[in-house]
Length: 449
Image (cartoon, rainbow, N blue to C red):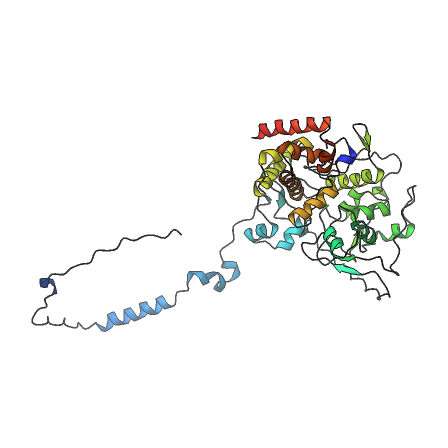
């Protein structure tokens, strides 16, 4: 994160066909066409000896009894069928792989492969990652029974069911309510992940339950009842970071205890294992993962708190190496019609290709995109982007670069808009540090060119 001005990084802007030569016509001479006056005598029929006829019949019967090669596997006993190629113990993922494709390639069950590697259907895999193909997979946990639906209340809050492609800002606009109200009614934030089928409150409702009171300033130990049960049932609007904070445990410990990652989808009614007292986060003397100040500027506590939550999520999740992120950024830029050298210059300047980078301003990942800018990028590409996902992070940054280039008078102004904010640049011009940033980006672009 290179942005020293908190108010300037909000980025409020928005078969090949074979050709056969024609054969020449053959002209037959009259001599060739002429027929003999008398037909040639028919050849004499020779009688086949009885012994030879019997032998020929036996041979035909034997040929008919042969089993076609393609049906051998289904007609032979299992012990005599050809063995499948041996499966290696591990496999290194390459670009374009999916868990289901890998399972099909090695004749494995997709669900068994997911459990063997403690993955879920929504876990992100990346090139260079090594997964296990053999071994004993843990038994799948029995799903918790779905909680009974509450009785409808008079004048209760109206809800909306999320469909693929929805974003929180689009939902808010569709129902004519502020985005901040959607956040408040559902205990969500700009970095929250929504999923198809999820219910979102789109009105306050006269009899809707009031939001729970914030936790006291002084950390309190978990209640004895919670410590005895060791589990927590997820409610609508919950996030892993909010649950960890509410229960007084570290986010990384909660994720480790439940074999989940930053991109795992949680749902109401799901039960989480709450780690014991040994995993509780020490109070008072814990050093934050992200400081509150940068280059002399101090950021609001709420922003720094969100930055620390995102940093903890990234620290607890597998991410691509810097070299792999470099490839991801370049490929994304090519696909989206942006100069790869320019996108690489931004990524190197902002984070050094470090997907775990989080700034005090809550700028996230390789492209250092803050949540509000991430929402803008989501609107630009027409789908919800998760800034913690390395591919989505690159997409967000490149989408913003593309939009700035399209709406700025020149390249320098577009580069400045990424750093200072497009509105700020148009109103106040480039600050001195912004000018240095622009020159740095252009110099880095030349090295990648």
